[in-house]
Amino acid sequence: MACRDASPVIEYRETAEGLEARQLAGFFVDWLRQPTPEAHLDILHRSANVVVAIDQESDRVVGFVTAISDGVLSAYISLLEVLPEYQGRGIGSEVMRRLLKQLEGLYMVDTLCDVDVQAYYARFGMRRATGMRIRRYDRIPGGETGG
Image (cartoon, rainbow, N blue to C red; front, top):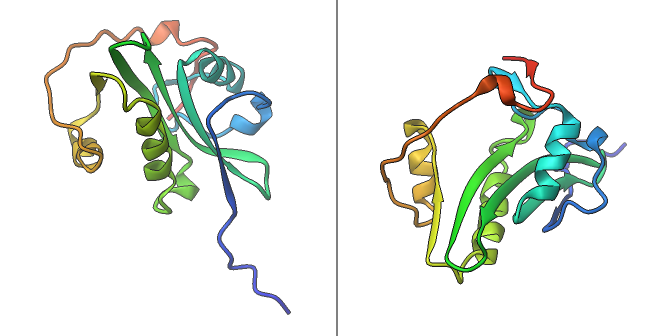
């Protein structure tokens, strides 16, 4: 009898082409209002750069990172998420490495993050900076109240 302990085979793609909303359930866990899977798919399609991690057995997206960019000088990493049950397996690090490879010709690559994850981003050569923000939770497309 074979053991079912094997790690899932993860496929990494640098495009959102061919993805469906049904593959995107479970993200935005700690958000006050969560975008629907349909809105999430739209985010992936409209981002200048994207890397997705797909569990080949379940055909489910288990991690992703997006960036918006002018394609000349700068980019902003807007979202990086890995489903809770897939965290700690290096998926977030791999999607980040692949995204930063896409952006390596640009002068500046920025992100805004909470203090508790700054050490994570520092592993990729990012440095702490000061930023400003506006959050309009009522404008999240299809925003569902969540965690």
